[in-house]
Length: 245
Image (cartoon, rainbow, N blue to C red; front, top):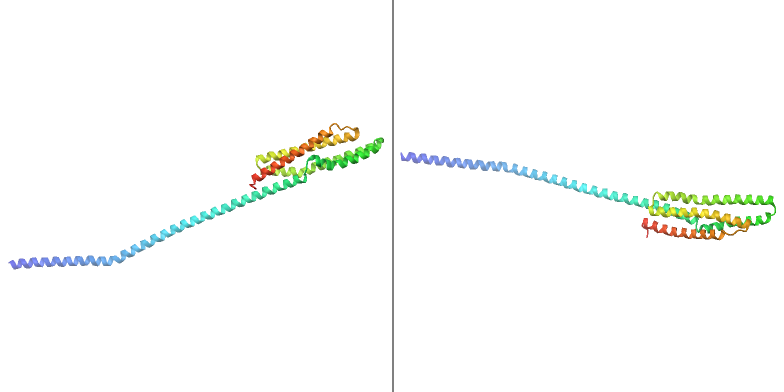
């Protein structure tokens, strides 16, 4: 009886031990079978993460390069615009100063150079014809016609400068516009003074009246000095505007 119990217990223990061995073997076998698949999946996921990271990094690099290219392009564009604006402004200013140079000197000096030959001729002809009414009429008519041509030429000489002045007013500062306006005003005043002087000189020839001659000459000379001051001021402001040292 005891032997049966002992055998029964022993047999049960043996069976239990064998089942434990089988279970352990099965688990180990499962791990050995599934481990390569798990590692493969891990590596695949790792590779996918690397690929995604590299793509995102490359996208950021591309975006950064694109921004740099855009900034570089914008800088070049802005530089070209500033360069073009500077060149265009300088060209217009330069043309204006060349026109001023063509009218170089005061209105009085220009007046003397251009008008005095006409007056000298009239004085000579007048002295010859003053006692001959018919001849005197011809002398006076010729003189007035020459004076008309003189005034027209004076006006025409300033047309290009006035046109250039209008162009400048569209691009320059208010301060420069004010100086340009003053220059034009001085030339207009000079033209009026020149007419007054021509009238005074004509009276001097005919009536020996020199009462206003000297005063008008002084005004013209002062007007010339004022023009020079305005020109110097204009040059200073143009250099400041165009940043020329």
